[in-house]
Image (cartoon, rainbow, N blue to C red; front, side, top):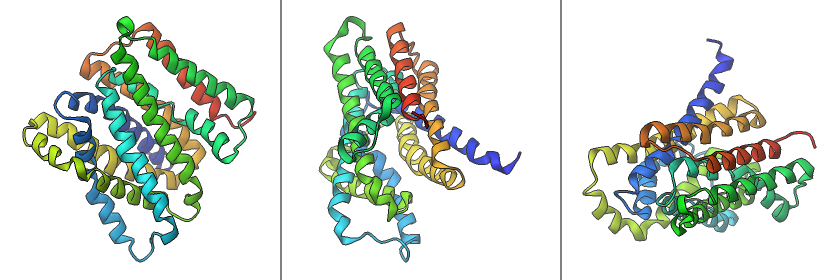
Length: 289
C-alpha cells in the first residue's frame, strides 16, 4: 500500500466512526439522561486531552485575553451542542440525526457571511437554500407529523447551529493555536461546565449495563479521543480542502449503521431531504462560483 493513501484511509475510517456515534447515542438515550451521556462522554475523553496538553506544556499556552472566548466555546461545544443533540436523538431516528448534523458546513457558510462578512456567492447561496429545504423536508417526514419528531429535528438543528457558531468564532484563533490544542482546551472547559450534572451521572451510570458501557466507551474514547487524533494526523498530511470531501461519508455511514444495528429504514421524504442536504453541502464546498 502506498503511504500517500494512508491519510485517505484514516479519514475514511474516522467518518465511519463518527457516523455511527449517533447510532450509539440512540441506544444510550434509552438508558441514560441526555446530560449524563454528555458528561460521561467527555469525562471518558478527557484523559487523552489532558495528556496532550501535558506533553505540549512547554509549547502550548492559553493567552489570557482569550480565556473568555475559550469559556464561550466550551459552553457552545459541550453543554449546548451535545445536550441538545442527545435530547433531539430521543425523538428522531439516528439516521435522520446524521443527516441534520451534516448541515454544519451549510449553516457555517451562512453564519460566516453574517458574522464575519465572508462572501457567499451564487453557488453557496443555492447550497444554503437547498440545505434548509432538505432540513424542512426531513422535519415533515415523521410518521403522523407528531410534535416529538418536530421537536427532535429542531433540537438537532439547534445543536448543529451552536457548533457552526463555535466554528465561525474560533476560526481566527487557528492562526495562533494548533487545532488539537484548541480542541483540547475547549473540550476540557466544556467537561468542567457539565459538573452540576455529575451527581445524577454517578447515580445513572451505576446501573448501566455492559452493553451500555461499550456504547459509552465508543462515543467517548473511540469517537472523540481516537477519532480526533486520527483526523488531525490526516489533516497534517493533506490539504484541508481535500479533507472536507470526507464529511459526506458521515451521514452515509450513520444511515447504514442505523439500518443494520437499529433496523431503521428511512422513508421517501427523509431520503429526499437527505439528498437535498448533501447536494447543498456539495454546492457550499464548491471552489468556483
